[in-house]
Length: 445
Ligand code: PA5
Image 1 (cartoon, rainbow, N blue to C red):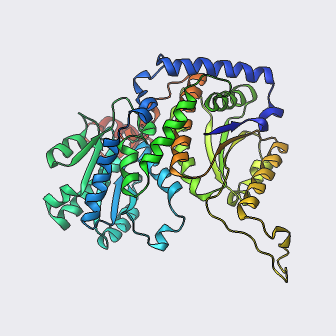
Image 2: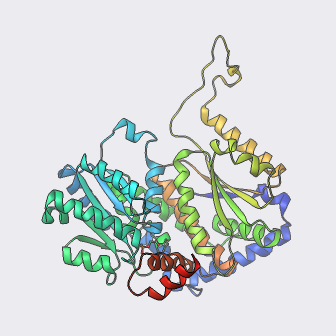
Image 3: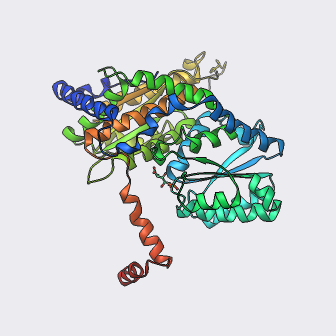
């Protein structure tokens, strides 16, 4: 179960004001539960942990097994934003840190494309494809996003040239809308095995749909435990209570922001496996809350590395941020620091201690120092980094995001601002229909 501790904020806030924000969180909780708020046609994600069936999970496993039988050892997962970050964050969290170097091959290696427009990236990815046995999962809910469409055109043409059209079709799975979009048309025409992104689930809330589950499964991770962890978290989060971790988190972050002017939240981790949890979280909160001139800017640091870069600023720079520390209660591997007769490095005071103990002391010491430096601290705790706990953590952040955005007074489930850059890009690329915008932009250059 995810726990939230806000003791590190107590010296910064008035307790009566905190209670006001708990009450606001209760109102937002009801809005989310009763589905009466803005964007209420995008609340399908709430029920996913209960709705996912064994049959659905077995369908994903069947694709993985089919590709393994063909000898596939590289799967290119194409997608951007919510069609990329959920799968990436779970895979990074659950992978051995040195899986690539150890060349463990229980399942195909999954790499990502369509999340940038770098020509070098695509060219170098094709260098890798050349040496491997390749399949592809292409993901776009709208089916019209440019970055994945460009990557897919290149990968599709490559697979067809290398394996022939029929075999290429057997090595491509499409995940998109049930009815509309270019990818839907293409998948139907080319007879690709396809999965649907439910209408009522937005991209950044889609990790527990085929969007996240299929790539995670193909990469060999335990999607049953991931969903079980989300379900376990869901059962606790559905209870309206002052102890509900989503209520506490949403109330405190809004209080710090609205009443005390802290405009940036830094998600802090002390385990490199959690780096992409922060990337996923930044999208979830950034896209859900950053609109109508409102929102808390989501940032992240990876400690202890970043204590030697960003640590100075966080300790003594402009006082604009609070921190939310992802605390992992226990490591799953053991490395003990042994005594050394010579003690030239003067580390014998650590003899007999686990490295994770030192990590926890670094974390605790940093939290206390940052409180002294004027940075409020929240702590989100999980037992360990495994599929069950990651499933719970992701569901917790989604649920808290719904409550938090309703306290803030925005629609958490749209992203109108994402269109602005696309319009300019299309105009600059001379896309038909954008002639007026092209002329207007060129006049500014
Ligand atoms: O959360 C969102 O809705 C967005 O980040 C989308 O996931 C992203 O823009 C990709 O969209 P699509 O899946 O339609 O290609």
